[in-house]
Image (cartoon, rainbow, N blue to C red):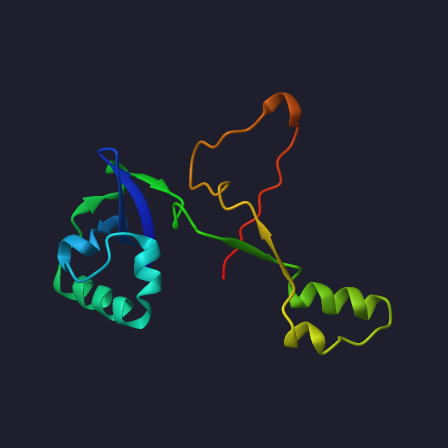
Length: 140
């Protein structure tokens, strides 16, 4: 199961994607949040409801009939980690240094622009200022 947010008929919806089909989870069970942020905040209870709804219900929407958008369309905050542990360990090893325990004890991150989150497809680019783009995916 992949959790998604999508637009259908101009409305932002939340669902689960599986084998080319989308389950409108809230339509299957009104106790399931109708947006990704509330679903995530609901934790394990929401996840269990979603899994049960998918077992009992059938997918209602074809993926071709919707526009996929950012999984969390309007996140209240976005944090980016300093670096992957493996990258830091390799860089330190290349300099003959041991990995520092503080890396695992005190996560280093920074806040980034939560208004610059986009899903699949079009996103604004100032083409006269850009020759190449570097895309990164951050997941937590």
